[in-house]
Image (cartoon, rainbow, N blue to C red; front, side):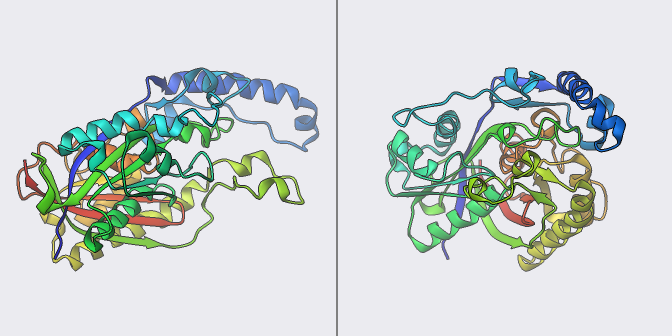
Length: 375
């Protein structure tokens, strides 16, 4: 049986960070302006007045204190409320490809490899900035890698689904060294105009190096004991942006082609689904929940993570068992669980095990059970 290992991870964090207080100030001003512009309709009852955001609610509801973004100026501009990103020509490296390069370098350095050792790249993210050519192939060209590359999208589970694809490729022999890359510019798909959504997302990029154990030279290695994926259709998390929009007969509400969700339904349905998924996965591997030293969960909401871990362990985990990074990064979609793994793994001892788990739109759930074997 081919044993596959994670031998390196990398993280790109944008320079700009936005606090809850800053975000609330900009949306409050925008809300007041919108209400004033629509005062007559609001008075007639044909429109409801928009309610201003409440700073105290954000942390209480989500555990988020701040988030990193590719561009702070545009997000905080009350007349814009979205990033200002450079339009690049076809002969320039795309923004999404460019943000991957520091994370790739960090991950390859940990793994003890050079770009030319890479022969497969999978880019998984909630939004890819164009349909084709694949951003993964652009990155392949930019770093001088060989082999093959492709993009994939399973929303917030794109990292774990990509990791299973990488493991399968390594086991089949179609690749020897795979980069799983998750470049999330979530600020460009977020709706900063509505208080229910404006605080949720942040930007970041993660990279994971996977290879066969027999080929690995890294000082720190994590054996992939098993992967498990599941999907179940739901409209409760949705983004309708796509190439068909311009051809549709009826004009879309602009709020339909950016992120939206029914938060309470998601909370109620996803938490038990993910807990059961992890329990079943561990049982398949003949592991008990008590044998899992750490849960690197998708960083969407603190209460969700606590409830999911409780559903596996039978108790609320402490911060060392289920570390949190969403307080400073917010929800970075597929990158979240990998950021948690990247920042919170070096203290584990040899032989200790953990679960990398994602969950999100689809619904989609992915879990990767790993064991520290070297380092």
